Length: 439
Image (cartoon, rainbow, N blue to C red; front, side, top):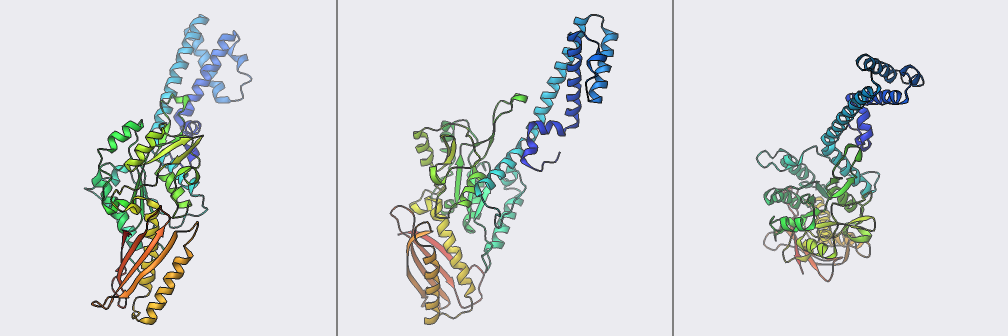
């Protein structure tokens, strides 16, 4: 069965697309027509003359004829046709439920991608790549074909002179499981300066989340974890279907919806809270959270999804890094650092083969200041900046040092981007290195 859009997963449409279920539905309708005929006391010929559907009509005649041959008593006829109709209805319901369950994983994927676009609110998503892989394939370290493919794709876009087609976000819906697997992906994200969004396990309540997460060792002072955020409290993709007696709603991982919101908002603005973190087209979450629950989960380093007044919002901006550099604990700050670094690396790469002298330094300084000025101020990337150092290494003449003090929109902290690289020879495309320090 081919699914072309989210509407194809609707239960009623699934039933119509299955030839077996369509035939079974006709049979049930025929049983119902016969039952009405028998209960009314009229002959089947008269009762079915108004039926405009030839197939149910002929089946009704056939069923009635069979009843007359095998049963003389009207009560027995009603009991027999009722038994057959109930059996057919049970088969229909169980078969439809099996079909829905079989399509659930794909339905959740369609739901997640739809929520990404709903929250991105853009007609065109620049440089978007989709990979068709199951979560278990993304966790397979023994056969890392998908891990290697993503790493290669990022490297081809980042390890080059021109960074205009670089990536900014990497979204892996669902839970990657062990820290070993998570670290593998985190290092890929960190090296290529992209933000990895993923999800914690799908659990039934906040206590379960806290208990399992505290034993996971996902939050550590490893710098590469500053490029990772992890959501919890999965979203309601659709309500449970009473027609097939579904026990629970369809839940989907929040990472894709949050990724769309992050794509939509300014890099320096965390997509969290009532103003910037409300997710579009989401009507519920797996479990309700109290104020204390939010504080505990946010304190652990997770990004909980919070339902309030009919809206669902992300309620944290934390990364999985818990080292001393507070800026690296907030993903909006990390994204600003990464963006500025990539722009400067791209700029310096374009200056390859230019000899470093007083005139070159003046040009470089002016270009950097112009770029940062355009991104400084309210509703922009940074609050203030100062170039503390832009000079040639006295021992290694082809090496240039840049120290940029930058104050992002973050409470009472200054940060330093320290960059070292080569200018004046061909070198590698990505010879510039950037480190972020708290000032």
